[in-house]
Amino acid sequence: MMLHSKTPRWEDLQASLLLSNEEVLSRLDIDHIFELLNKVPPLNIEERLRWMNESTFIERHPAGGAYIRKLCTGA
Image (cartoon, rainbow, N blue to C red; front, side, top):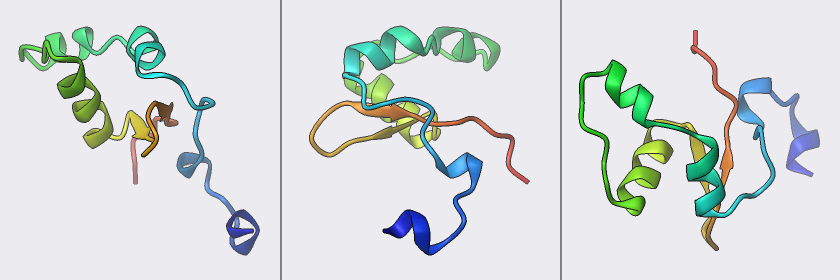
C-alpha cells in the first residue's frame, strides 16, 4: 500500500531478495573497498554487517538477514 502512495525511486528499492548474513557477506566483497580507503576491514562478522548497513550497501532486516541495496552516487 505504501508503494502505491508515492512513485518509488529506483535508489530506494532493494537489489536483492532477503538474504542470510552469510549470503550477504559472500556476495559483497568489502575487503577491496577498505583497501581503496587504506583502512583495515573489520574481522568480526557483526562489525562487517554493521559497517555495510551504515554505509547503505545493505538494509538489515530485524528478524535477521539483509537486503542488498541499489548503489547510487546521490545527488
